[in-house]
Image (tube, rainbow, N blue to C red; front, side, top):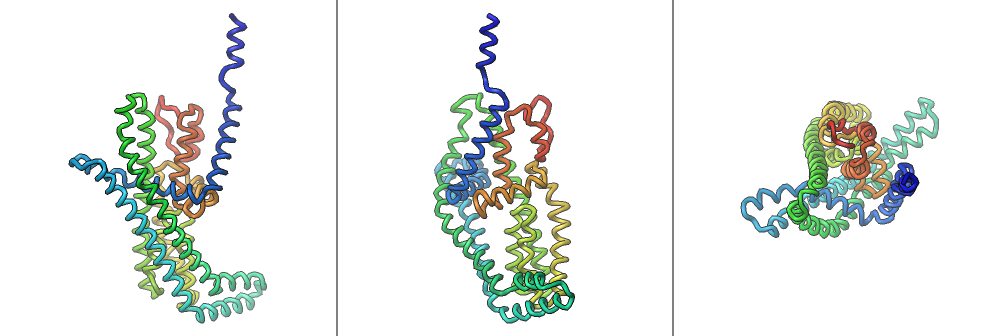
Length: 358
């Protein structure tokens, strides 16, 4: 009897180290597959996030007696309107930036020459002078503008696939709402986890959109008051880049600073940096992280790392989708592990309630 018991213990469930190794290998294979298929995975992830955001629109419509297909059609239409609006903003900002760079080509070349001469007189060396000249080179800035416009056009091309994904996911979301009724109360815990995740994603994007709009208005008005050309373009850029955690501020700052230096010299460029820095520190560093933390429970370090990581895995869309993807991975890996409470807490998650594992 004892031998049978011992044998059963020996040949039973795999050890924790084996389970961990299997999970790590499976995760690495999954990430490698996502990297290879990133042109498919990125639109799929974007479509999923869009459906999660607009899905609550369905409920009041169905309560008013709308048929399910009609409510699904409204969800699809709103999701695609959001996608079209973001793409239009990016295209407009990219092409306007390109026209500005082309229009101020002579002024840019003169600014490059003056900066190079100034750095040389300070004895900072040829390498630093060359680096500054390259950063302000009109051809480099034009390549950046064309890259933004090209990425936006690629974004529009992928929109075709996103549209198909949105239609299918929105239709399936209506069916999943009846899962508990079809499968019984045993699936309630899983449904609650999915709903909690969806709610976190919606809160995250609501917070980012709200603060992004505030930052865009303040930056646009400040640039207009200082006489920087095309303040509306830079306001749009500030709004869009606000969806990229931590580094979005820098991405939205560089183009208006370069143009301010061209039209107003170093004092105007420093003034733009000062305004953006004050707005960023007050809103995006001191205030917004508190709201984001309450929405998604992620640490600032993990938020920053997730931007770099998901951008590498699935491309530029990974920067905008980094937080939802990181939340999904965390919930899938740590949600049911009773010993993962410490890891979840280190990631920024609040301590679990008594009796709640992970």
